[in-house]
Length: 167
Image (tube, rainbow, N blue to C red; front, side):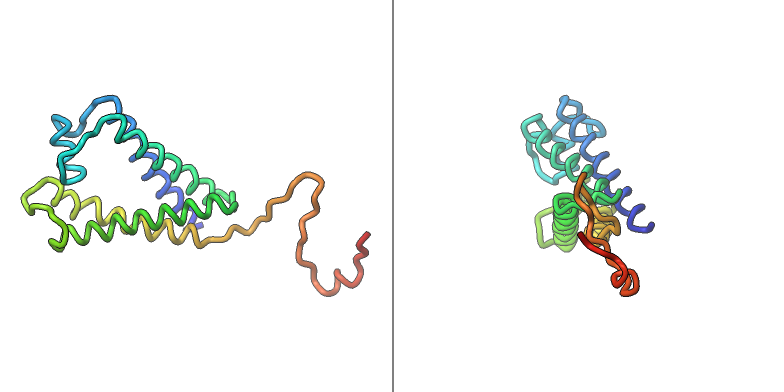
């Protein structure tokens, strides 16, 4: 049950971030007054927030959200599990980079909006979500997927195995 909540929370976080990226693809810059200010606050550098930059990110975030939610809901296929693991790894890398910025290993002026947001929001959220996604990815769901006309191999007790007849 705990992993279900964790997976749902990670999926919601990724979906919300993906939707914000879609919003930015329209040319809107909320919560900043302009694209440059937005870029400096979100990334710590001056770069484009045009559709060519933010739409692929939105697609990755929304795909990750869908896979994590699917894995959380019992779709224990290799793809959903692998993508959930990739989400955990990506979030961990971002969280560790955030620690690098906070420690001064990566360039980020201490008086910038990015520095404050990185310390207070981006890094802790990424590290917590990475941990949660890793827990979800490690979870093996208990159901077996079967296909029409194919009988699943279910474990039998020694008593029932002795009395069952196979065709």
